[in-house]
Amino acid sequence: MGISIILYRVGKADRIEDLSNLEKEIDKSKSVNLYKMTEDLAIIFMNTVDTYSDTAALPYKMLLGNYVEKQVGYRIINGFLSTSEVAKICNWICEHKINSFEGFSKMYDALSQEAKQELEDIGSGDKKSLFEGYVQPLTEFYFAALKDNNAIVMCGE
Image (cartoon, rainbow, N blue to C red; front, side, top):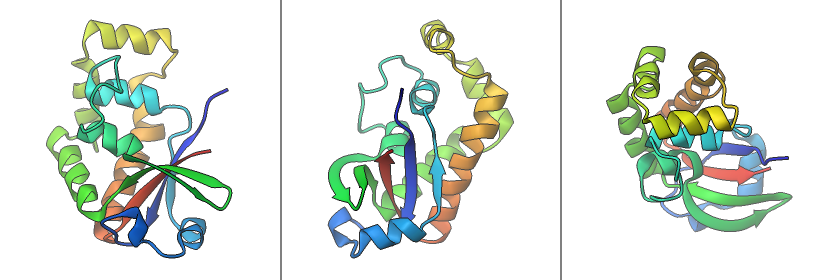
């Protein structure tokens, strides 16, 4: 049984400590649930099976943020992205065109044989279901966060 990774849009912040009443913000915030597909997406976005090898990489940060550990109500926050980092993620999304099925397909089709094999071994979905179910909602979430000047927190639930 795995953990769902859920990203929440919160107020503008450079540091998680800048956010006051975080529990209330999370409760009323817009979110995107990556369910148990975080590893699949990391393999695709980073083109590696060692998805924890570069925690400073934008694709890694897009999914898991910068590591923090903070209990907020019943949730445990394990990742945070500042408002300025959201803009960097959106630039990466646009640069790689993963906000369109064509762009995501191009990235998916260019995966190394090792990455493709790992996706098969873990029973990952096909590229269309991954795009429609996870990548498209994720990229829309990021563009909305950029527009609304949000920071993002990541929780494992």
